[in-house]
Structure formats: C-alpha cells, structure tokens
Length: 351
Image 1: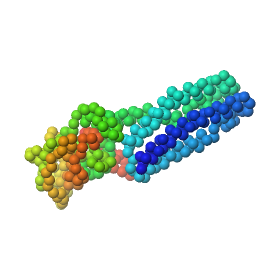
Image 2: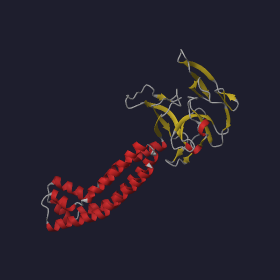
Image 3: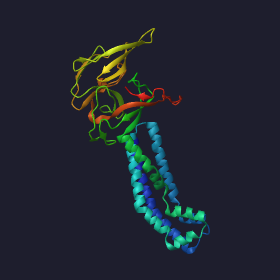
Image 4: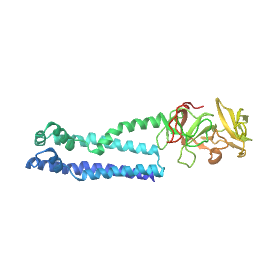
C-alpha cells in the first residue's frame, strides 16, 4: 500500500512539473510579452501578478500535500520499503534534474535574455531585476527541490547499497550479543555487491562464514532479520539437549554464569562457532526440542544467540543466498526509546 502511494505520488509529481514547464511557461511568456508591449505594469509586484500563472501555486501545493500523505502513510501503516523509496526518489530527482538542466533551462534563459523582455526587466531596480529573472527564467519549486536533493540522494543510495547500511535491532533474539535498541552497521560489500531492491548479485566478493552475524530477509517475509550463521551449504546441523553439533562435531560451550543468582533461570555460555567466540543465552524454563537438518545448496541455517527465545531457521526454514543483505560488524549507538537519551557505552565490534 505505502509503496503504491509512493509510485503514484512520484508519477503525479513528474506529470505536474512537466505540465508547468510546457503549458505554464507558454502562458507565462504570452502574458509577459503582452505586459511588455502594453506597458501595463509599473512595478515588479504588479508584473509578477499579471504574468505569473495562478495555477502554479495550487498545483505545487497539491504536490506537497501528496508527499505529506505519503509520509503520514509511512508512519501510520509502517509497511514501506525504505530501499525502494530511496531508489524511486533518486530516480525521480535525477530525471527532473537532467530534463530541467538540459531541456528547459536553455529555453528559460533565452526568453528572459531576449531583447525587449530583457530591456523591460532592466527598467526595474537591481534587486527587483534578480527576482523577476528568477520568477520568469529560474527553476520552478519542484525542479529546484529535485536539483538540490539529487546529489544527496545519490550519495546515500550508493553508500547504503554498496558500502554500509544502518539497522536498528527490533527484538531480543540476539541477546546478549545485541540488545533491543542497538543501532548497528552492516557491511554491504563482504558478501558481494547487490543491486538495491531486487538484490541481484552483480559482483562476487565473498561468502558468509560460520559464526557471522548476518542481516537478511527470511523466506516469504519482507521484514529484515538478524541472526548468526550456524550452518553453511551442505552442513549437517544437529541440536540435542540445547547442544549444537556441526557435521558430527560438537560446538564447544563453556558456562559463564547463571542469572539471577538467587533463582537462576538463564544460563550464559561462551560458544566457539568456527573461529568466532561469542556468548549465548539458554532459558532453563524452555525446551524447544531436538532436530537434525542438512543445509541445502545456496542456503544458510540461522539461529539467534538467545537460543530459546528466537524465531529463526527452526521456525521459517533456511535462508536462500539471494535474501542476504549483509554482514553486521559494529554497534554505533544504543537508543531504546524516545523517552531515553541515546547511549554510546555499547559501541564496538560485533562478535
């Protein structure tokens, strides 16, 4: 729903802007030439009122209102795809920028610099001359905003798609490694470069390793998840009495503590998964059962570090390679709610 609103508003913005530039500019030039010939305006304000099409303002307000509706829908419905929104906004701003720069700008400049029009505008005071040239030969608000935001959007799109992307931890499934409210950075390069939105890999760089903390989309789900890579393609993963086995070999675990001390319900263990040493939680009150599974080619078996309180591959299955987003590598801020101040005591590398 939110994505459809975005596409509709983008198309409407482009069409209204083109209508302003083609039809509106023609009306403006006709009116301005009439004012020049009849000398009906003795001051810049009167000239602007007589020659500037009145529907320009309400059509721009209509565009602004449409974008406001989209923003409200993002906040209320919470079903928008940020990657798609960024791509659409960048493309829209780019189209308007290039068409305005290489098609409409020359025509506007030629008109305001034409002999009789330029001479007429020159009769006004210098500050009024600049304002009139901007009104009749400058960018319209839609193009002005698009040309201002396009470089910023393009840089953000490139960085977010191919270098690093920020994420917020939404659940406790990765406690104690990651907590609700942690803001993390995800490397978009280590697992290969992928096109934004579609996720198609365009450059092979590396593959996920056992023990990596990975961001991905579960099968048949549009929400991003973050879990730890347990099984690689071809691995046999077995889980018996809360003990992991990979390809028949036990994954070493060492008890660190049981909390709270007086009535322990959570075991804190240190686990050695491949070359990665990290901590996990076991809830002594919960037993989710044993399993054994062979990881399919091109798929990965994912589990949360909060082993008994995690929706992972035990629930929705193995993650296909094309659903990978990137490797989480650092916490850069912790901010659990708007009622609290952000903290930086958890800043550091993710293990």
